[in-house]
Length: 212
Image (tube, rainbow, N blue to C red; front, side, top):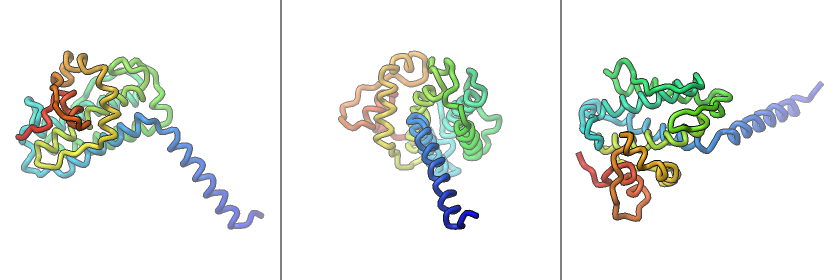
């Protein structure tokens, strides 16, 4: 009979091995995308109930409409991830409680992306991405930039992770004209600043000094 200590060691070793395999198999795109989603999540969770009507840097959206847009985009990503087929952004039916709509969207999205084989599904998908993994590598910009938009609109500190910003900017720069021409971003703004966050905001048509 195997000694209890040895059994515990083997179970621990097996857990560490499987956990390390999971971490190593988690793609760079998924790590970055998840960070962007949680950046947006942190801002949503700090919005005061009285601030949902506040104007955002996106002229056509107040804070509630911006969250509705973000939910629509990420529900579309969820639909692509679960079906392995092209899908459109899909807004929630009920936006009476924006934070609740967002939480449901977030949870469904992360559960879909955590399923085995999801990231390797082949498209083409949005932006002509070859796989789901490639697609979320591009879409990272959306929750990342909108976390800044929502923070500015609702009186929060508008901070973005510089490493995540740099990675997203490298993806977006070759696509900047296409994104602006298709209406997915505003036209790029020339920014006289060496700060990577300011440059990124200018690339997606934001004035870093925007105020409500």
